[in-house]
Image 1 (cartoon, rainbow, N blue to C red):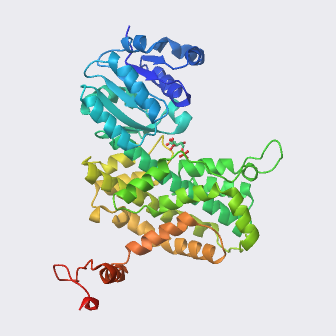
Image 2 (cartoon, rainbow, N blue to C red):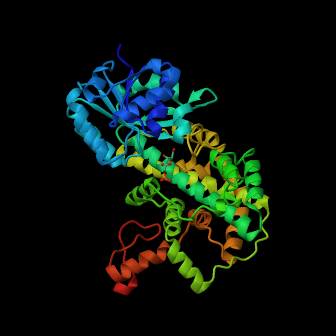
Image 3 (tube, rainbow, N blue to C red):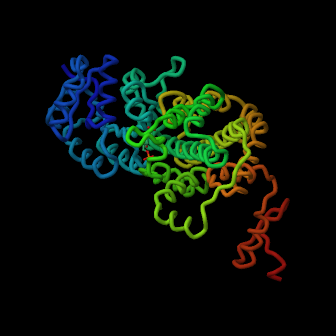
Length: 465
Ligand code: 6PG
């Protein structure tokens, strides 16, 4: 009997996805570079093993698949993916599909798609969000590739995806790199949202003197209202834990140096490449980078002092500030998606992207349903912040964001992403901005010329007369 899909790579995500498929009645062939992992996995599969066929060689694994074949690779992105493509393609036939389910740079995905298309093979770049638990019980999946591949993948992925009110959180979002790009931007938004939660925590703890557990309870409370989101849920939980070894709050024993695998950075790089700005995401990436310079920060604190002033902010003000900033974070993410969709001709359906993110993924939140409605309705200039629902929310919550950021800055607190959100908004709400002077400067030193208001053509200033 041949299997409906092959999963190559039985690490955390690969095994979880294979078990999820088996549990949903899909027959799966599995294999892995290290044979020991295969037998361990089959033991872990327990009763589900009856839907799973293990193979020790790539050739036998491929021949154990129904044609046209679909093979999901869950391996580190980059070189290993190219090596596996080289290894597997001699065993494949026209019409077969290779899927990269890792977080890959979409430029590589586009190049691989083109390369394989020359051999009549299909390449799918699929963003998978939700971590191990999501992969096992219902991830959100962002698929980029051909219609041919999607037709085969659709029933399998819809069966294993998270659902939001019955709608599976997976879709074919566009060709070649579209899925991986949407996942990259998802991660950019994730970085900004995580950092904002860290900033709120810091203001409450070091500005208002709240204990971690009290903040955890507050976040859990917010998670029951309009700020509901997976990140509030888990952050609330994290803050209630004590370290079993020292008895201190867990958050006090973890080294304050954040890691990053690169997707947040890719979002910023791509935004800048397209002439866009993603200042909230950049601020979040920057905050992680600065966090990793622990020794330098200790030295700078020793020289300048690290005192933080007391803050009189109440919880409701912070909640509104977070609401405004979160809306602006999503808005930035969708602006980048829109720029990429135009540039690469992807015709992204932004409402559908929001719907795919409503469950299973890390940035799922109560706002995504409204975001999808906003994109399906009248949206002036295609800007989320101009939709009825979000412009109303922003109008209500902006005073709180302004107060939070200004009080925080005046008291010496570091709030890079909250501040960036306000700067983004304040720049965008100026119909007339400061670029008049920039244009004059450019013309003065470089004779670059400028447009005059209400007049066509290129003009120069009197400094050239
Ligand atoms: C997800 C996450 C996930 C993330 C990794 C590492 O959607 O499940 O975004 O894919 O990329 O957890 O992220 P960083 O190391 O970049 O924080």
